[in-house]
Image (tube, rainbow, N blue to C red; front, side):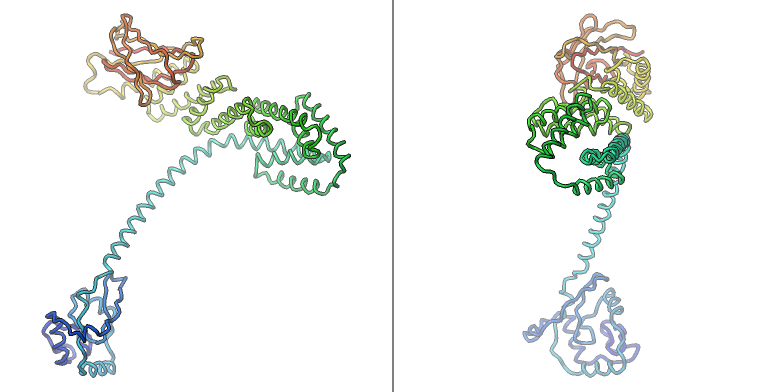
Length: 515
């Protein structure tokens, strides 16, 4: 309860303000006593319009504005503090008016402060909950951005070589376009400049010249049908001459001019020669490792013959090779996976086999530098499955020793020794449908160990165990998938060995106990 004269708080049962000496009127005393005892209001009181409820969002509580200057219920300490913030002491003239109003009896109003739901507190909790959710979301977003940034940086670095090659090719096409423009061969100039812009969209010079050439072509007078036919014949003959000289790119450009100028001129012959020119131009560019341009010519050929299997396969090979180059130096596992897919389709495609060997070695060196010795050993084994190299064998042996030291318990080594596997050699069996893994199990002195179970697995698949014979020999023949398998001795302590299997290959391995 507060003094309606000066605003000083009055304790329960105190009817005279200790500050200003103002007495609470008898009518208000009775009203306050009724509100404190919980007297039920009369029907007239219930019918009286209730004041509008407001929320104090900054304090998290609710209050009901009263028609009387004096509060109807004694607020608790928290409410009193809130009232001190929102109520100012009345001026003397307003205080007199308030006293006069208080002296006039008015219908009692049932206090609503004890029944009004405190909406501010749940809203405050919701705000705090949203705040924590926002913080968690921001942290998760930051983590995701970091991951994407790392991955994006690797891809960006891997594409640098590809971008360099494209820009070099674009510069070459740009120069050809300038030469054709100087010779007033506007159609050929346009074709060269369009290729330059496609390979290097940032080449502003090529873009500007292309706009210039398009303007010149648009200004040329429309030739008559006789002139078009005569020009088409001339261009076709020039295309045949270029084709016979091995300039398939030039022949394709001339034939495109023929189709654009006079589509009715020998359409079958023009289409056939254009298809052959585009395909041969793509093959030539593949040999020069200009994969992006090669793929464009293969696309041109497929537009003429969509069902041609040979062209479709060549485009697929070039696309895989280009993707592998994009991973090179930035994502060795991506490069290995891509070139492996290409190797399975066309083992002799360019330098795919050598790139697989190099990628495995590079990845193994990287893993070795990160103290991932077992994974490095597996990569060296993968490299040796493509080519036997003494330096890589030494790296594999070193990584294998480090892997064993990290895998074995330092305090209590296995009493009978641990069996460690290694890839001995890979043989070509001469059958495209054969794929095998064989090996020996020997003790520390090199003597064969018979009746030992050897397990073979890949991913979540497990083969039936093989058992060594009297010579310690075991064999897994008739494998059906060219993947990396894991060999394990099931009844002897051993370190698992990863071996890559491939068609027409026999991989020889050996498990031997270490002292």
